[in-house]
Image (tube, rainbow, N blue to C red; front, side, top):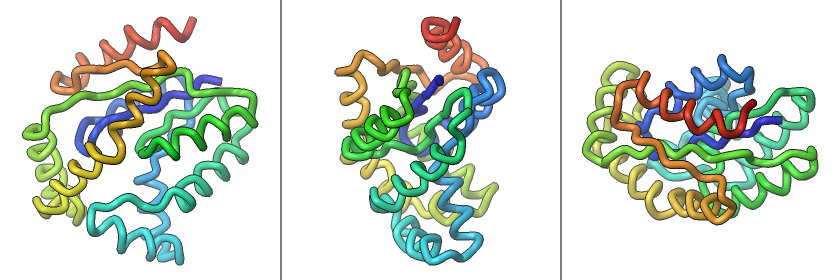
Length: 192
């Protein structure tokens, strides 16, 4: 099973690159953002709670996210692998993910970190907000808070996987094709 963590700050291009990886390697996409937005759209209890938290640009609690991810892994035991997009966001989540995958006799093969400067992120997110109307991409204060939360709470996950020799940084300020070319070079070391 090929399990990839696609990692980077909001607006780094994770969604775009995950689509390419999913097609090429037939992986199941686990985007916590998509899962949470679906719960919000369905107005579930979890979705309503998550919306209040997300609207402030803050992270949804670990127990909520981990429960959702665990259920999806359990329901897809025969998958070729998963691409984790937006998860893990904390070292605690990374540790839980590793334990969860061990139960299924697999592990995280690699973490691909899309590295993008803050000014570029802000431009990308505000443009995305104008096109999509996503509240968390329109307000510059929320955008800045999301970036700050990424640096303080999420970026340490990179070091967690670096210590395991599984983290690779990709320049995310290139064309989509150039970013994927760099990703493909790294992937060639893991997929025969």
